Length: 512
Image 1 (cartoon, one colour):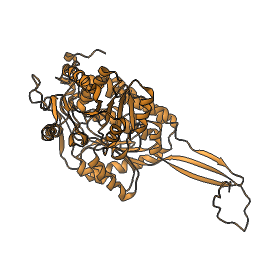
Image 2 (cartoon, helix red, strand yellow):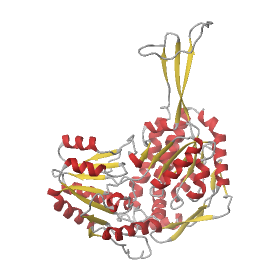
Image 3 (tube, rainbow, N blue to C red):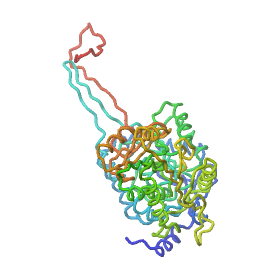
Image 4 (cartoon, rainbow, N blue to C red):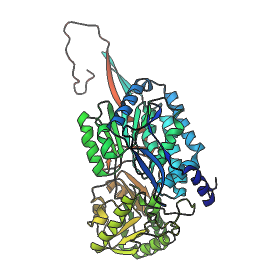
């Protein structure tokens, strides 16, 4: 469909009327125990767009108990049933593609084009991919002279899933789809800053999913995070968000010794070699700077540019970044929207002061932006830091905004050392016309995802996850199913019983 500003504003008038969502527990919408609500804001206009429940431990317990009650039946459901349900979830998104994109834009401040072409398409695709994966969990057999061994793979149980505010509906799909495909039930905790699209989606699919299979509780993380992760009936936790929050969740998970999947921050290196297509590399730097306002954990925020092409790269980067359209997120022409919250807006602005203190050059940006008609909006100019050293805080800390640091290099080995000299290891990019060099650098990078000659080149089934403090576990691929299942070994004795029975330990190079 063709999106126009007039159409978006008209539809926003219908969808943007503040609506109050309850807690979704056991297939029903119920009021939160506290009786309090949290307001959801449009960061571009600062107007309210909805309300969610201010949840507490009582809400958490209700949700987990509902998920636990639904688990036995769902765990034994046929793969075809789970496949059909996942396809139906994708279809519901497809039917309201534009509406969901609009809700993402209204509550998060992202350009509606980003939401329409990336977030919503990705959410649909994720449910469709894991619809096929519903048949994937299966075991194996091994035959011995005296026994047959069966290895079953079974759903792990109730999964607690905590998602961030930067791509709400896409993150919900990332978590829900593999868990449902594996036969797990879920308690989903969306971010209290931006979750309007997620709540509307849950309302839209309530008639598809059996009661208790998906439960959603809202509230502030410090209040409901601990009782959720430490609940004795929760068997798995998966989290996408910041490293400090992850450290707390890992601590909570230790109480009941439950496994975790953590997809955390990044400070990814986007490496430009002297033989690269400079304009294309600069364009990739623009994309990683502005896409979703830079609120992307895998953004290539450290651009390592060979000294022979640094001036050429910076000229192209600045020229292309100056052409970026910043404005009303509902306008399909807008390429850079508003920061998702006042907290994030203030955080990014704080890094501008830090950059100046560290002696960084700021050839472009470095301050709030003013958008006509949206003067109260949380807009920040696209920003380039140059003359950056890798040991500076602006090069080491995740800013999570439209900010890119450019770092000069001339020796490949030293550049790789610096690229890896960070606590993170989520993504990376390589720009070169030399295939051998591309493979060599890719092998040397300590990071979970690498794109060669096109950044953000996501593909279905691509493992998403990081090294080091960017987390552990993988999402978006068949391996994800393994994180929601456990293996069970069953050995069937084929020998006749005899009195001289002894425990048999495997011997080297022996069957028994």
